[in-house]
Image (cartoon, rainbow, N blue to C red; front, side, top):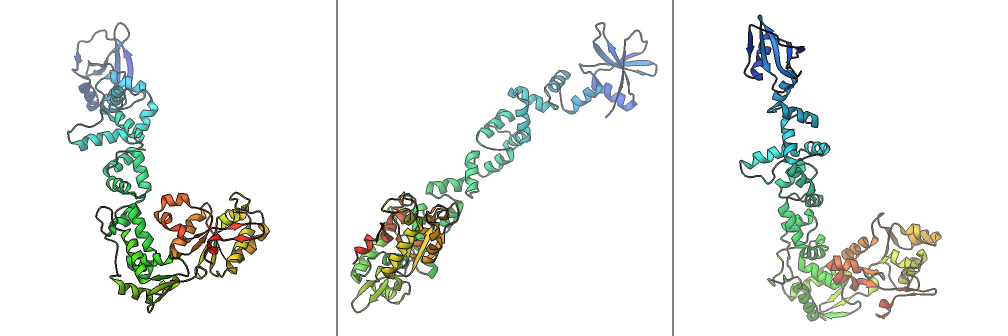
Length: 456
């Protein structure tokens, strides 16, 4: 870039005075002739009117066109300012380019910091890209600042995020962040998943691959899928679930078994089509296939035995079933008061009572925080030795593990918790947990298990 030396002067007389028609040509002439000494000619009021140079005995001059120096003129040309007035006004406002100054002027931006943020977040250049992508069509926004304000109000952090979100169909930044956090990549899948009740992309994709209709359908699929690790078909899983809920120590005729099974299976029909879901697989196609399954399957024997001669299924006594204890719930329940101080001894006494009634397969599941809250900490070691003892991870409710345990094992559960919130969230819990739950009462002198006493 050319640097000039300036000297103030006053024109007195010159026989050879040449004046250029524009500043551009004057500046170009100085560069080509390598002239760097420039006179500043003032008018009678000491206002600078012309730039001038001495050349071959003559004087060449050009109106300043309002510029204070030729360097300023070159800067203005480079940054595409149309005149000196806009150039110096932009400088006073802190803007170097005409594009910035024009945007600020047209949009009415008064906060330089906000304008800086708009540029740093890519919305100035992004607006240009937006217009180019429109191929001459009308753009929703009048200028980059209007675009920036709207995008920020919709929750987008920067233009890059806005661009990626819009490419995938998201027009709201807040919604986009929620969808991304749940694993969704495009708005179409996210909106459909929410409509169908799916809360994550993983569940949505899992369901779509298996032709599962919606969230409720997925939960029914998962409930039966608990047995599928053994390679059973859906209807076989359904029959096993039914066996796990039959009254203990009872004989159920094959006719009654077919009636109960048909009723259970009908619950899986879609309300609108009255047909079974496409994912529901079958292997039990008549009485003989059911009898063969009851006679020969090892999992069936967990719940009872089929007498082929008598044509009935006899369920095992409840004592032959596995039982899990809601340890935190039991610890807090003294004299029927759910808010009593937690005692490890309550759980120890309950385990002892269950063993005295013939239960041998017993597990205790507790919240991780229980060991810090119990009153009789000296009993902790005895509690851990009383039965299989499992602590839920810190900051995680033991209820999650208790419910999953009952779901997978179809075992009995000792707890006074009604699991009301879980019943709202999980249809399986709503329909099944009360079949497996045994209530209790702990007093000073005894442990009462009323559900077991009913079976005597």
